[in-house]
Image (tube, rainbow, N blue to C red; front, side, top):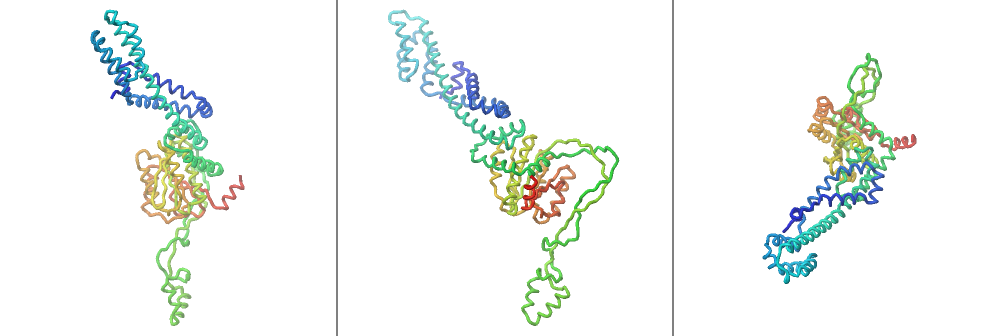
Length: 487
């Protein structure tokens, strides 16, 4: 088989100009011109993608095969070039028969050349052979050029369909995710997947929901724009009040922690309650109740409360440090369902918008009974974001496994300067000491920060005390009504 690349080489055809003309004509289409005027950032991102498209078109043309009829005609043309004058005239009738069988566009012109030459009445010379081969070469070049146009037209239709899909996706998501040219360019790069309108419509819906929660959007901006401050003393230390969490005696019934003697009837062991059914032991039961000697379950927990303390403070000069990627951990337990789920997903969308604008990475980890990973700023980030938003929050809460996986991710190369963001209601079991030590090690040795986004007023302070910053967004009915009233 003869490849089109070989035919181009032998006929000295340059496909680069054909590809250039095709792309220029495609981008000059009226519907695209109107779109580019509305979204100039996407046009600039598209211009950066043009060299890759041209290279792909060139490779596809080179890989295409020439039709058998054209290949057979070209092989016969090459044989005629190698023949001398006598051999050419001797094989001329066979050549014409072959052109007729192949239905070559050159057949009629070849017959006219033979009739005009009046070969029986004129001596044989080289001029006729030269003219015949020149006209034949022009015909082959035209056929090869037409083949190029056919292939380019097919590629143009496919490329136009892909371009329209990506432009529709980028145009729909730009108000949601792109706030500057950097974000628009990255959004265009992330739109290469096979997505239908119904797929990315979920992103638009959560973007619209985020607009109805300005406090949530503002919270994401405050967290995303936060940075470390370099300590540069400007004046002497001055006393200033601070609110801190202090531990109080463990009086909260949080979890079972053994057995003890008490008069708590609600937490009696079954064996003690059984004595009430025996007449001889009933008086003994009441005596031990008065003496607070009945065996019952001991329930203990950590209790923390805010306290105002005064510290000596040295003010610092705010020296911005480079912002790193986000590692966002989302609690998908059953208690985070409903409105909490909407807010958590919308908050992740707001962080993705900030990551795109600042050229940062955004990594999502869903934790419940198992951990699911998504990197929303990867080349397939839009597809992964759609799958993430389609997840339902119905599992349990394994905060310890989540924090352990987060610390391991932050220890990897490329994530040393990452910020961890934990979105949860923090209604969970206390953290093991091993996990707390691992988090403390990341905070102290690598200066990495752990943020807590608490979506409930009933989160356990004993769990949240390991975080560097606690951002509160209560999703309770009272808080929601208060936020709406303030607007």
